[in-house]
Image (cartoon, rainbow, N blue to C red; front, side, top):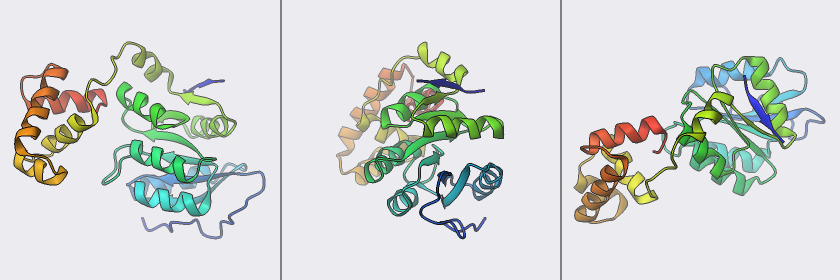
Length: 223
């Protein structure tokens, strides 16, 4: 249920024209080919919806949005390289008339806040029924905001993300197992600065060490 408030598929769907009359033109973005294919097949059954493109990641989605100008982009969050939050922000810069609907497995209040701050028009989880997803797309296309109700309620009681961008950068890499010198080399900071940022992040999330801080931040949707 959603709440509305006032494997080898081509990147561009076969035979999809750039202009498609009254149908809502969709771009599907997910790093799992099976998910892209399943979503495309299900949504293709709706007479007013048309999938015009598929992307396996954020950078590809931005390139396709620039070319295709989709009405609605269905965006996953956790993807290799550019994540769905960053991709949403960048996609709306190159295709400002498009709308983004986040479709993800991760129902975390922090992700909801970040997605809406990035400009997404809606946020639903992947266990929604095909009918619910199709209706969410229609509502978003009409300019309404659609949010999973349980997640919306949870976000009311969840604090804002305490981490700044630099702290998120270093904690995200620490969660991947990188050492302070390795993190420093990646983001062009000194190892001492990285250690200070990690200490700050650990304190802000109330953890005992960087591993615990990363786990808490991931669970909250802060990374």
